[in-house]
Length: 157
Length: 412
Ligand SMILES: Cc1cc2nc3c(=O)[nH]c(=O)nc-3n(C[C@H](O)[C@H](O)[C@H](O)COP(=O)(O)O)c2cc1C
Ligand code: SF4
Ligand code: FES
Image (tube, each protein chain N blue to C red):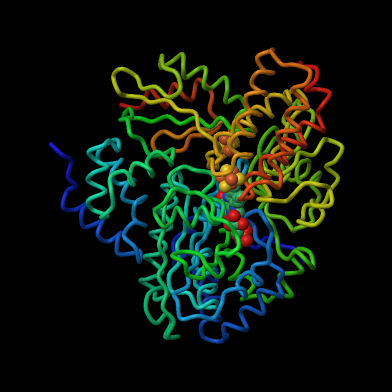
């Protein structure tokens, strides 16, 4: 079955589209909602978004492949994004990633078989004073060490 | 008297709520500007304040606004909240602690330039902050500071929050415009400059969050006062973000012209225990590196240009003696090769080759001529690209490779 937005989401999207003099400008906000609702933006979701904004599916694909936060593949329930930029590296981000790789049994870019965790390394997250830091979905965690990450991950259901 | 301007009330609980903000004198600047001042007077005041852009390039804000032509077309304001320059986190503090200060700046700027729609382009990862901004915006509507006929001045304004989706290049102003229009964030050729041809081909002002956040203070206290908080040609304070191997990483709001040495050793508590200073990146990753004996320097736009570096986003990254400069270079080159939009060959190919060479050296397979190849490739990027990302990559790569050549050579 092809995906559909709920009535509530459709209303929200209408509101967003109305902010811009051209419909197309709403594509990033609409794709954020799409990814949140369906977990990823595959070919089916591309068609849905294209229909709403009156553009071609290929134009949606062009956007999805340009922006790193948008994903064509489904991610784990928890997306762990570890900063690998300079301030975090200085304070041990490398070892921290190694620890996560060992703990989760996956490499950066991979998802655990139970679909619980996806691990990524990313560029500066804008929280360098809390190095080394990471995002889990949209929550920031700073000053990471193995003990802290154990506590955080073990607390996730 | 030098004082804190932007971060003064950051310690207050719930400052992000309009009631608390108003108790601290919030929205008085908006009242003053919309009820008692003419747009020309505001422009004059901002010009006299010598407020230079806090996003990186340091262009005077008032001068930029004056480039907007008089036309019947709609005009737009884009607030740059993309904050992707590695090492930078100051705008996050402003928006999460004091969103209404930013909104006031947007209202006054828009009134001054004749703008009726403003967009805050915020990096996608700052989802929680985007929500906080949206709450602040609805409070401002409820209190009559946004919407139609604001404070019965006849002036209308709407503000919208627009979330990016992970692309450093979208912080570059013309890429930001493309992205906001719903396209891939690929920079445009300049001229024309956004002030005349910007969002949807209309005149557009683009300013950084911190730049705009200074406006209400200039309106309330005057340009003369503002200049006194910093330097004659570089008014106000800067929010320095200090990270890396220091005892107390964080934000420090200080007058422009404060010494880099003092920021690191007095304000940020000095080096982490047992660490010795090796080098400092003084203005976000794109700024050329300074060695430990080059930190006796004033932190303002002109002083850093004189030292062949740049103030950029005022993000200070402190590197210690034990950190291998090759590791630093690896992170820097990986970043730019990843973030190049690919439009210009020198930037796309140059950055990816340099990164490959550096990785090869790190694997112990480096050759003697590799160091010169890095220098040659980086020089070929410099000045040969469409947007400033090319230079932003070449500058740190060249400075790191030249200043730490001996250490790099020990790896090949
Ligand atoms: C690659 C690149 C990334 C940039 N990223 C940002 C950013 O994240 N935030 C920002 O305010 N300015 C950024 N800038 C600078 C903007 O292009 C622009 O100069 C600035 O937003 C203008 O505002 P200002 O005059 O108030 O500083 C970036 C520039 C380049 C070349
Ligand atoms: S310099 Fe690099 S980032 Fe800028 S337009 Fe050219 S390829 Fe894109
Ligand atoms: S370097 Fe890791 S958050 Fe900035």
